[in-house]
Image 1 (cartoon, helix red, strand yellow):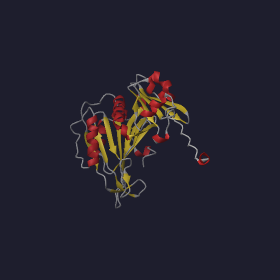
Image 2 (cartoon, one colour):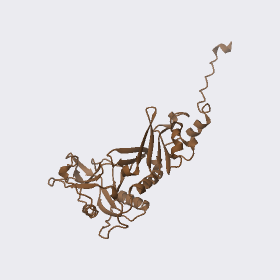
Image 3 (cartoon, rainbow, N blue to C red):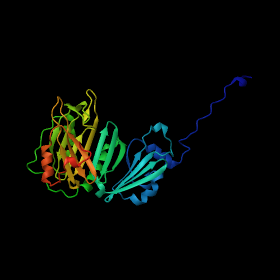
Image 4 (cartoon, rainbow, N blue to C red):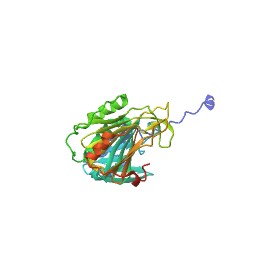
Amino acid sequence: MLGLFRKPAPEKAPDWYHSAALEDRQEYDAFGPWVYEITKESEMPSRFRFAYAQHHDARFLLKIPVHADRREMRPGMDLYVAVVAIDENGVSIYRLIENRIVSDRCSWRGVAVVRNGFNLLNGTLSFLMTSGSDVELAFNAVSQRLIEDVSDFVRSRCTGPAQMPRLPTTVPNIAITDHFFHAMFVATQRRSLMSMAAVHFEPPGYRCLDRDGRRRMTTGLLLLSAPDELIIISRDRPTRRRWHADYSSLTTWVPLARLTGYAFCEATTGGTRPRFHELLLRLGEQDLLLSCLAIPETVLARLDGLAVPRIEPKNLVNLV
């Protein structure tokens, strides 16, 4: 009689973990925000495994995880959005886009600039191509050390032979008075095999006008000179609003051997707040624009000393 009023036992939730294949469970167990180096075929995501034979001996073979909460993922799902192979000849990128694999390949001759960007846990590795296009990979900043190793390898393949073994004695090494920029300088210097000097520094926090004439505060700029590179350290943008915090960092390595021209446009004077001068670096069809509150005289002299052709600003469309 009592059995008529007894609640039925709840159905057990399906055991999705143990019902999955062993290989899928192993991939799921290792899944997280980290960028992994692939060392054997079984570590290659199944979607991309067709490319393993071609790239198994690459200097770096990396898999980039999807940007998703781990609790929403399951064994057997697509846990990785891209695979990157970097070797002596160039970089190959395989991306999962709308349920299909799209691949890109570029040689080191086509890479003009290498750039690393960070904003808290968000990181980007960018290759600016001489064709004018960009290749950008997003990753979690917990993999910063591995990505920096990748950047250093790519830089070594893009710089070519140093045009001079050491910096000229006329290049000054100015003081860096800001903690953030000084820390970035020390970290960059530690990763370089050649000497470098701080040749232009603009502390953050100065009142200015941006390109649209709006009142803003500067975020700072540091230019480092090495025998084979110009290194640009900055925030994500040259200006910020007052009282707005900026946690971004951007490091751009420009190989001097890839420079095909430069232009410098001085800012208009007058007004209560200064405007930015603009330095354009041309590398093939790739234009890199820098905003400077002060004239980077040492950098301009270095470019002239390397016989980099100077472009008249009137011949440029994007420089105003």
